[in-house]
Amino acid sequence: MVMMLTTSIVLLAGVATSAAASCNTKLLKSCVPALTTGVTPTAECCSNVKAQQSCLCQFAKNPAYARYVGSPNTRRTIAACGVSPLHCS
Image 1: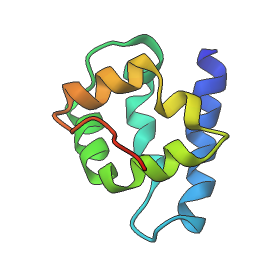
Image 2: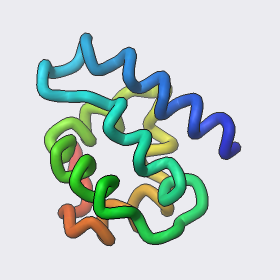
Image 3: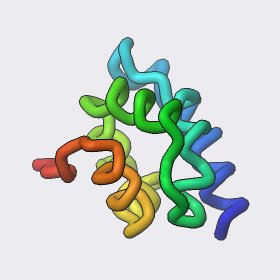
Image 4: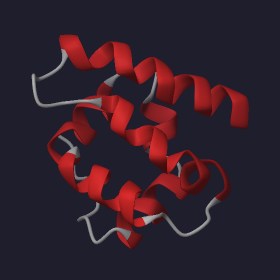
C-alpha cells in the first residue's frame, strides 16, 4: 500500500503537464510520510499542499489517484496544513 501510494504520487508528476500549467505534483512528494502514515506534515509539505490547492480536485477526479486523494491520511494532512476540505463537484 505504501509503495503503491508512493508510486502513485510520483506518477502524478506525469499528470502535471496535462493538467493546469500551475499544477506540479512533484511538489507533493514532500508529503509522502504524512500521506502514507498519518504523521504530522512538514512545513514544506504544507507549503506545497497550499500551492497545489487548486489542483487537488483535479487529482481527485482522476480514477488512478482518487482513492489516495480521498484517503483519511490525505484529509488529515490537508486539514493539518490549514487547507479547506475538498468540495469537488
